[in-house]
Length: 604
Image (cartoon, rainbow, N blue to C red; front, top):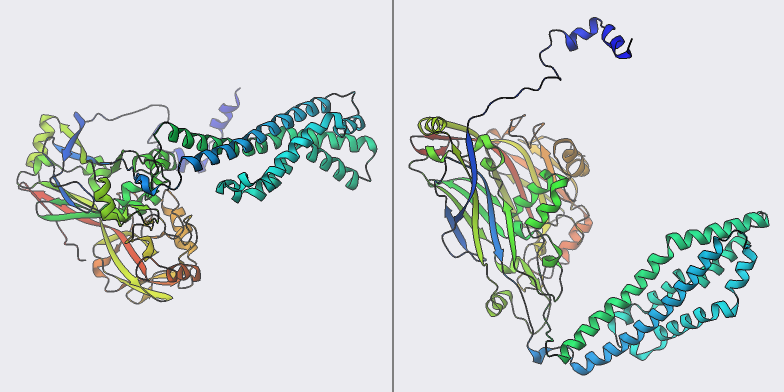
């Protein structure tokens, strides 16, 4: 009898709670038939000049029955900050001298690597020859006839690095002089061989000669197979890349195509950062308002890891845009998925067919160019507005892609004739600019039932670029340039003088524990969250805090010394801290008689 039958037979009283009066089966798939519909993504255009620092509005055409997902598409221009020839740093003579110097160094590296690789290959063969004792291998590796060529090439290269005037003329090489000199010790086969033999002879005194030979052989084989070739390759690539770079510069002088450019880069997460405000209006009422900051904050806690790579490409988080160098920054198409309530769930789609007298409008205000890019500190460059006018850095195009839903005639008639009431999610936020001091108590003004709160603190220099030389760090909520480090030592939430969280709560609670328990993704250091519900990212309510009934909602914060030091070192704009707090709240939107409006007014 099969063992599985025994499992069925051992049925007891306890199983009644699991299988008594069964309601489902795992072995019969069921499905539900759906109403007939179709979805098509159609372009919608803005009214106004789509450029940095401007307001533009899109009146959504009623081309379909429902309005679901919306994507914002912005095409940024190619940026080529070419210098006037009179301001070039080098001329043809300098380019020729640098090319010759690098060529000499490159030739020495190639010669040395070739000989060293040959010695490595021969030693590897000897180590794998079982009838060749280790003592004979040691004699061969120290035989001048076998090893002198490598020694000579090594000394020639080292002397060139240490004493050559032409080597010192190349700033990149001059700065790497000592690292390059000592790096040779990590892949020169003779040096490594003698080091292994010496160490095992010195520290292996308790081992028999046979075991010492085995240890030497294994150590050398491990070096050859694991570490030496990556070191050789790294050393060679430094010389090769520099040789190619200097050769291209010199050749471009010869054929008349040489151009020098100023360094330039876009800010990180450009697709988010470019948004100052994004308003959803129905009729004359603002239903919801999002900001670029909110897009960054929400994405940090909600995006799935497997979607992140493609999403970063969509919003311009790619090296060819954000690396600060003199390369031409190409024209690029930013695609930003909007996060309004009707974009997230198909059941929340706006019934355009029921809005006979009201239009749906999306208003976009873009940040100024100075807040979205930065240039090198060079007297040949003026401020960003002048650079923008001189080089023609303007938005090429901006438009929306709207997913229209087309319904079957019966369902369309029901949507058109019925009164609709939707529970929607909206964003509220409070800002506190130019905060000073070691502590701060933020008194927040919100209304409606709120699901969760997100807040952050940034130095003012992360958010302003008056000279054009400062990088705005919109997505850096930490202390360090790599987005690490905490801005707060401690914080707690207060509701009407009552502590909502422990006053001694570590900041890790808001940065690690809360995201782990309630959100899809861990935010970076310095982005703090607190959830009032159990499934805050789902539309289904799961406990809220009704801020309309709270007279005093506060966040009491104590800043870290490291953060205060960064704030104090500000040389870009006014010394101070920018604090912002966002909440996701519920509201009711009613659609009747061809018009729409919120049931509860948002107080800000």
